Structures are given as structure tokens and as C-alpha cells.
Length: 79
Image 1 (spheres, rainbow, N blue to C red):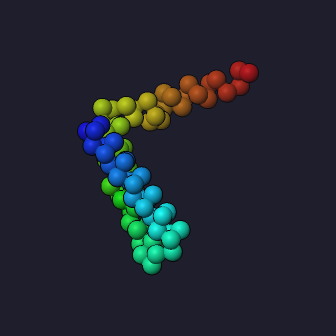
Image 2 (image 1 turned 60 degrees about the horizontal axis):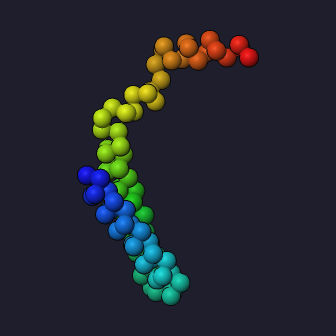
């Protein structure tokens, strides 16, 4: 999965580089290429990356619950 993410990221970089080149060359389809690149990044690469990154429950330390809130508010006035 890590290799797939790296390949997808390289594809994104090449896609954006091509889009920048086409914008500078004032090609008529340059905006379409750039838009599709952003679409690819937003709806294909990022969800796949987020799933890979947090599939093992690493996100649990970022979830707020009552215990963490009480502990945080107890330490507020102790400075």
C-alpha cells in the first residue's frame, strides 16, 4: 500500500507539472488539466492516504472524551 501511495503521489506531481507547463504555454485545455489534477488529489489520493495512515487506530489519541477534557481543564489555572 505504501508503494501505491508513492506512485499515486508521483502521478499527481507529474500531472500538476504538466498542468503548469500547459498554463504557461497558454494551451486551451490547461485549466481542465489542472482541475482534474485537483480532483484526483482531493477525491482519490487523499482518502486513500487518510485510510492508510489511520487504519490501525492511530486516530484514537486525537479524539476528545470526558476524561481528557476534565484533565485539560484542571491544568488551566495552575500556571
